[in-house]
Length: 374
Image (tube, rainbow, N blue to C red; front, side, top):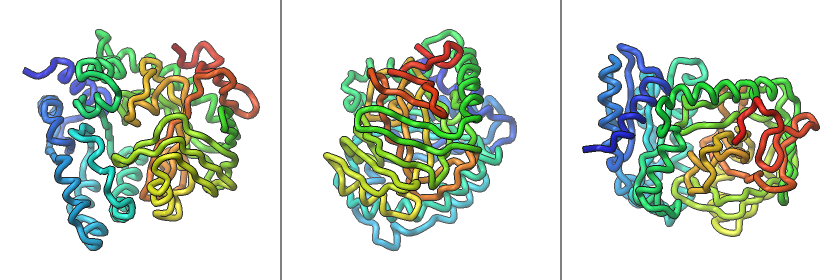
């Protein structure tokens, strides 16, 4: 008998996050270990009248690909994947690994090569989403490996995952709608600003955002959610940022990343661990050294770093910035095979975010009571 909270999560993902309608083509994708949640989502999609199909993979398959694939195979763009990306109405993706470190020793050049091959698919996916032709959401299935990364038992981690999505509440959808209203006020305010400045330890970063759209993330693309984000002007990012937490990408971990930007481009990049991987990702294409996203975390139900970007980037009172591809709905134009979110913790004295010179967040709390706060 599966955890009843999985059925509650599936109901939110299908009914609220993606709003599956009769006749829609719905892809459900995930690892084999997440099958209990896949099955719950499948049942909800069928009940909603959608046409569901499932794609499943395993850690071992991914590892085998990078271990054995030739350059030609790494560069191969599957026409089936292209077809699916162009035809689906809804995509529900699940993350869940049996071994979160299975990619640690993979040659980063291979990962960069494969990312470049998938670039047209990623671009098309984001374009269709921006046009409103594709709804998507991604969520985490609790596994022993992820619990270990978070330094929790599986029981504790499952509670953390479900509470982050407000699934412990009687009506999580109503709660997310209330959060949406507060985030909407914050996003509307930021829509009128020209420059964002982030100040923290070893950090003084300025981002031009005039004319860019701030997106209110309230459980429709990521779940759990809780952020507002935009695409900075591509040549208007200057200064230095030092990320507080290890940044994880494709199973590889980089520590103490510090980036310096000049006219929008990373001109200096350092990491105390994983610098070779960091540089390989930054050098994979022309857009990889440019910020595609800047966001402020607003989920105050999430307070603990877990080595899982889905949760870590939503921590209330933090900010994160993603190198690489921008989301077109923000007005961002940067294209890349990379999209790597890195988190800066602003929940300390002296840390703040300014918008056009006015402080909007200080020591992890927003200055206005009608914006999200603990």
